[in-house]
Length: 332
Image (cartoon, rainbow, N blue to C red):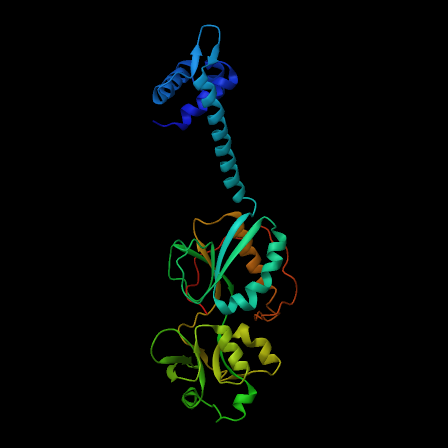
């Protein structure tokens, strides 16, 4: 039998002192209330209420059952209220996955400000360069780079991004000049591990002609931060997100190579996106997406280019604007 409705009716009868009063409260007839109580007693195999023409009294079993059931119904009501509050007040645990480089350079430095604004929230942050299944891993938000291929997810673009070819002056000053993509075959190229086999960098010139150049070097890694640090140390040439090297280029610690080409090692959509399940629009998810948007926005300069260093503190955020399925799947 369906226990919950008869339990609610039984508690209402005890609290109101009569079948008719309980019926008025619940919108049921006294006969319907009586049938539910009888069905409950039959299911339990004992009498709960002694009925007379003048009043109702609880049996010993009824008194025990009332105490237990009343607590259960309170717990159910509390559970329902707690879930409802999750839709309006950011609280609970927010599980976030991010690609390593954007996680280390942008997300992690911003997290203390986010948590300070939302003391009822806890963030469980996972960093990797592997594509994760949001449902299987119970991830609320995934910060990715590249096109969204799963139509069941929603993506919000946080920033545009291009890949730039960079090296430190200490490396370039002692190596052959680089005038064309083909010259890279004579250089130590620090490559991102995508799969087993030859690494290829793809170049598109102003005339939209694409050429592929096989590259190799003394370091390969699936960690963008490791490649960035090795490049800054003068080990070789790397293909990095523009936002990760813009400050180092401005400071002269790196030089950009072949700036008239667009270059990538997989796809040419390298934007940064926040991705989440369509059904996950709780207050904590909305608050974090708002915060990510503010964090990335205050790192963009007047020309719209992204930097890892903020130009101002992120503003307070309210509810997020609607997002569309426009983005992101693969990321470094």
